[in-house]
Image (cartoon, rainbow, N blue to C red; front, side):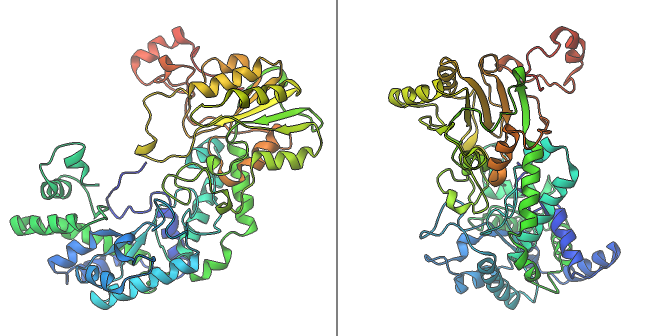
Length: 511
């Protein structure tokens, strides 16, 4: 993930350039770079120390809301008097609040408009800028179309589709009123600073930090103020950062239109966006193995479908979907999606298709469920096992071993033992090690994280409606010993010399 130390006005991790482009196209003044600089210089020249520090400070929206998720004017006003220049994220980032999982674009605009009004009342008409993580679509905006994750964009090798993903993401994010979308690690993780004040000093004087996302408190603000009191010579350095933040706000047109994007409200979730997301899903699915031309299947083929992601949209989307860690049990929120099971039932539409799942993401299953699955598999010519990863994002998803949970592999091998031809379908963000499954199954298809439209795209590929064209953007290692070996280039001169020795024998082949 992109660092949370925000430098040179880098704020939305995915769509900064897109959003800037949208802002300029849709009403921000068209001026030369020199004019942006001149305006920013003129504004910052009037700044006090509090103004400078405030522009560099960002606060989590949860610090501004009441218990029932309404804007608390008094809290906003208190931060505005501190000259805070930015707020971020969704109040539902870590889960639902009072039964609500997300806001509509109109609800977002109402909240952001009120925050902006109070901010500009208190700090001389200088606008705040709001930021969210729009990672693969406007993930916090209800009814916005969600695309596959970034790795799917890479697997498509189609820059036009990736551009569309960013354009639509930026447009929908701006429609909600958001124009763009951790210093404490120096003490807690890297241990290069003794306390928060020293961590702030190091980040500002030895790194290019322009805005801080230590958003749950005012430690950055307080630490920076202490820095200036002790070392006033750093004022010019901090002024540079404030200038870059102000320039970014000018480029976004916030001084002219403090809450942008109203003209895009009606475009959220339109059919063209759905088509673009579906096309990206189709072009990003990778056929890793296809022994004996097993795929595509005929529609009258006898098929048993199983696996914990076969009837689940959330796991096809992964983390940063509605909430930080995503959801695997709230498919009703993903209104544009359809599961692999549902679309296959529609495509096949006969009694030769059956479904059952007793497998969990951690690899657990009961003997009774396994017996049921094996019985159904034994009656089908083909078994499609949809496995991979549960939803996750960032540190909570870190693992020490790339191997899939042993139970997942055992479950699939038990199905193979019935004599059915197994097609392994993966939905995962990382290349999880498959053990000896590639030697025992007939085909392997990697959906990566196609998100909402992935079920349809996967079924279309399995049944030959769409020819798979995706390619792995990263190496898929066969086993633990080959994790650091890459298939497309040597990582050291030693690997170059040994290339003829390995001949990439340790890599899953792409066919």
